[in-house]
Length: 206
Image (cartoon, rainbow, N blue to C red; front, side):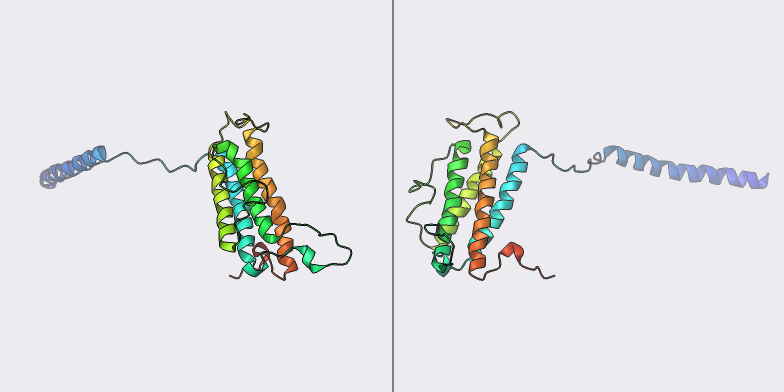
């Protein structure tokens, strides 16, 4: 009995001390902000999917344009005089680059409503662009328009015809990518003919 009389007061004391601590924890938990749900990856859209494709071909084309030395920008296979080859009148490397950029403007501007750059009259690009730096800037600006065009696409409007175009918005957006890849293949050959390994084909060191 003596032990019981000693134990009971101790038990009451322990409970009395523990109870406020438990209440404090409960109050703190109640006032704490609710846990934030884990951030979910963004859902792909038609605009983001096309933008990614444009980024892919943009890198390939710009890398090749930058890899060619400026003193080779006026190169064309015609200058090699390869027996049996018929390269007469083909575009120079500079005009290849300008053609991609000019075509980007013609293809993608109907989607954005932007006016064509001054001096752009045909698929060979403005004649006043002569230096490598000016030509590459023209190229990069044309791809910036491509990203702007991709951003206009939605599932509701992608099959509509912008302005007086007979092509759908989706067709124009994707054709710009396909056309650029076509000329990327030609530009790669121009590099190879000058003993330059295309950037995408170079061995990457760790």
